[in-house]
Image (cartoon, rainbow, N blue to C red; front, side, top):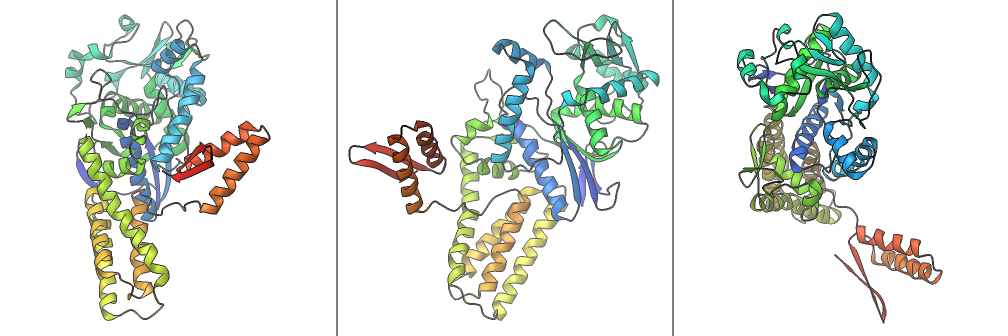
Length: 468
């Protein structure tokens, strides 16, 4: 298996620290609003990497955090007249709903920054003791120049960075020993959440949070650290500096970064009116379409989101779902009989396509080529499975397609529809609840049916219903 390592700018053979196990950390969202489709890309991409690793036989410890204390969260809390905790809790739950819709697996651990403050204070203290950090009036800074490999990940020369340091200025800039030093701990402002520390009542800087959460749940050294390419500098560069300075060992063997997402060839922004949340997309498409769209390009490539490309993704996904549905419908009528020579040869063809799928994924997770192998299986199934086929032949093809789509996180099995008589029973129960003036139960039943695609219409002749 080969992975493109951002640190070395080349594909490298994947060799885990511990045989058969993968320690993987993915930077999660800052939870101050609904997640947007740019947030969704790394979630989908690295969930797929994890799924393939598990399919390949690895035991994956997958950690992805929620940043639940941040300037944006505090700003939203002040604007809405609630606490920062209220904001973060609400949007963690909303994020989890979207992740479920995208079929992103739960992480082994989803740590919260606010629950790991003691570990952050401990690491900052270690960095001060080792001479890598210093306290100035309650703000603790990291001595960037003291860490020799600071520019390795970003390929940025430290002297060039100094010329451009203005874009990362923070309060207390004048107290820094060097303009490039970054914040590990900052004193509270009026009305902000804070924690006690040896330096001031305050809160941690963003970068130290991930270093500490990764260390606690995965160890000092990990196999893979991943996120969007916008995190290469300064976030991941700062993580490497503080982790390796504190722990004295290599932080991560492999660094993986997904490319940017554009909207109609423009950068997504609220000011341009081309900003879409995952929830916005869910109103028009099943979120499986969004997942399929994201996997239709190589994860390191920039990807362009447009209505036309989403329609193309929907059509492509429908081809796969229709083929699996056709196999499901034909399987009950097929006979249990010996495979013909032609069918045995056909299953060999399917295995060659499985190899094509695996080879594509082993080559830095080339999901676009992996999907093309599934399309070839779908075409083969459409042409070669008929009502005269042996049951084992059709079943094997269906199981193979289902297994490989599951590696990509694509659900091919349709949920069972409610039978007409079950719908009628629920409608009767709703009518009785209304007679009993139990309107809460009546509304609950209506909402349940609505979630299942059943639309109710109250008429003079009684309740009429139809499937959406």
